Length: 588
Image (cartoon, rainbow, N blue to C red; front, side, top):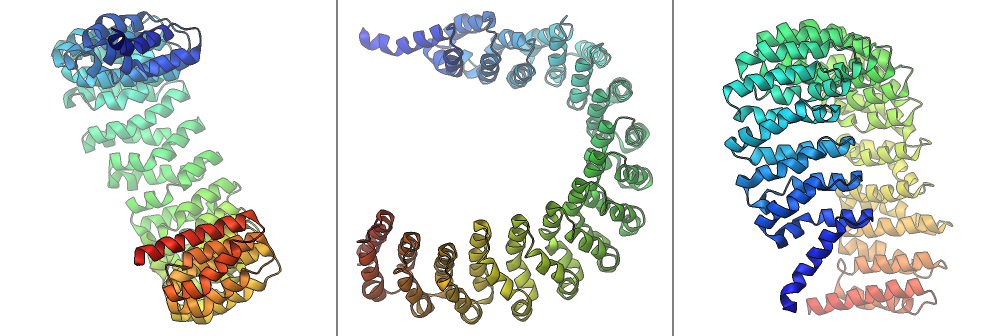
């Protein structure tokens, strides 16, 4: 008997915990609802657990949120799709609570359950629930109902469809702005399920009401509806109904609405098509680029390249470039930063001549911007310009600025330059690189900031990969090895790291003749941090060099380090010796 009772005991505990005063215990129990349901079986879950949850008047939002989430995946535990309707009452209750995140999760779970329910069950149970919510006395119910129409509508018979469209129209004119906001947010989803003839007759009037709402929070959500509806309408209807709204919104008295237009502009252009974009939306976009509010200019500046792709290069040069020049000297650093992150992408659109004449001066002014993020955004996209204007011109005009930035006072800017160096090196070629950038790469190994030294060590390795071991042996290895005598131990550690990165690229011969002696010599350093890093480097060199070198040179050094007074040095030296033993056993 005890054997049978044992699995049920935790279930009894979990059910008791659902009523416990301690929030954490209730939360724990809710998160294990699926375990409780599995133990109770499908029938008892339907008849006992779900009614209990429906009546559960917990007042803690965290518990209710967890319950709303769990119920969304509960169909398998109540007996499958044919019993999906039993999950609607507890979720309906959660759709009415005051806390927004609980309601949103309940709506999401209802959509998930509704999407799996059978058609007759949707008509019999889901739609009546939706109508109750839409007619709810408390605004929270009406807010939640807006998110459910797109699930209910496709399965409804014709008469009910008409009723649902009418109800949605009433929600779009609700007294509460929160309800109208929800209606505006969900209009695109609902419209996607509606038959084409009703789109123009029923949905467009609702959309027009929302676009003229006196609350800017409703109008800005209607901006998203422009793009969604534009994709559903015929092109000529889109130009007739959606385009005037977009143009009007771009001049809206609320900056939030204008910001939304600037943010959604590319999607709006896709909705209306290329011709209307060129004739009607270019002036609207130019207005947004010159908007009084910095936030609007930031959003518009970030879309410059995407917008120019829709236009031909002539229109872009004529209308957009003058605005870009103004933005490059904008009073807001965030506007300049947004522009810098995308402006490089304009080069392929404008072509070589326009890029050289018009864009290069803008790049150079942004590269010298006082705000580090602006400089950073330009550096990270330099390769897009190189593809258009060629490396010769790039090196003449931009290289002095790059060299200047390599010594920038902001370490993140220096870091971005280092990460760009291997790409620049491959584009410039060996000769040019040696002249202009070689010394910089060595200088970074002695930077005050660890992240820069770390990136510089990786950079040295990538350069060796790019130009080959022979070149590295002449131009990199001697200079790197010279720094092992630097009086500051942190710089000596960077050199050890660079050696361990270079060794696999340089191969066994150069490693044995040039790199290994320096590492062995460093094992006699007075600083323990150097010595245990020597042990780590030696461990990384074991697989690269011949077994004879390991036995003659590396092992004796590691044995000596394993008897060092410092505990960390002994630990890493012992670890390296064990690794050496394992490799010996595997090779034998």
